[in-house]
Image (cartoon, rainbow, N blue to C red; front, side):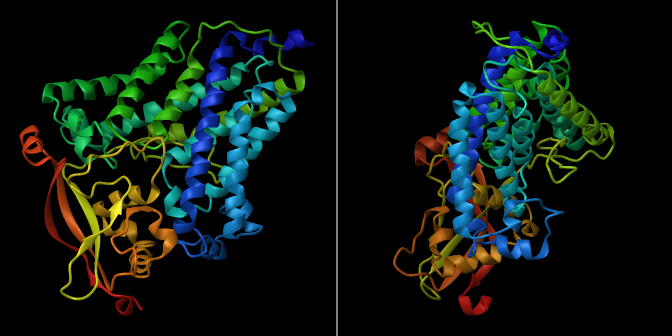
Length: 467
């Protein structure tokens, strides 16, 4: 009977399965830690967009989540801790029997799905759906003593194809600077969260920027098709993806998007490592994998239609389980960087003192920090806020109110509170234009940024004004 299912197993991909599973477990761990450390200020009972308020107007059918059964901040923290413990166990789950593997990875997926589906604007990023889709497929990878299922490896590769090819298409369709190879004249400076080396990348010679863009197009529009070629071509194509993602890691902070993309790339590789004795797929498990594959073939209709359509959208989930999603990034590039800078004062006419964020640019003399693969959700939303005030409609008034009250949970999201003893009487938000200093300006002033005030974003307000 086992011989009937030999085609369903790929023991030569044992090393690939090992890497994919362990990197996914690590990504889950990072994601649950991020949720634990930030949820009270963002989503807690006294957060900027409280989960209880969301649950009161959105039902389980529209947002499947454990929190429809019960919500409290303590319960949310318990879910996060369960996810952290489960992620650590997943790092050593190769030793577990197959049924335990299935249970553990299913629990991880359900826990994180529950968080994402009540996370509102704070969990609207493409890498949340990417983690859920990759994490769901990992359920069916199996532990080390079972040969990797061929169909699951193909599904992971298909997921990588959608990530890369979708991003390549949206760039070519969305902004002329990708087509004329000038996108990186701006992107390293205007990206959401610059890193320590972003300024250095920005000041590379412009012909090299054009080479970067051209290499990006090849990696995202040509290389994805080679992932399905016979070996060793597929492995070479996957290595190209890994190298490109490493370049992105060095040049910016994109939470765990790059880590996940690198993880998926390993699913297409044959890694030359000794393969321990493995058993074939049990028939019941092979049937289960086949059924999952059929489901994903059906779900793929929507992302394929989106990629081939003239009105392609980025990072869209077509169902509430976040399976069979479409992906993409930077369909348009901002040419000028603007920042919203928050500050407070003790009274009218008093000194205005700035609040410092953990990742986003603020103090011109502070080097942009390395944040990824950690995700600073408030900092990212502040970047979107500078693009349009509409992005802050649901949470900006609450943020201003929290600063005027010195709300402890919200202030924990910040790097620096200039009013540690008592809250300010007034808070305002100024609108600045930022640009990287040139080499001469950096040597003269020691600053990393030059900023110019553009005007008021939110004029000075007090608690009485908000009430």
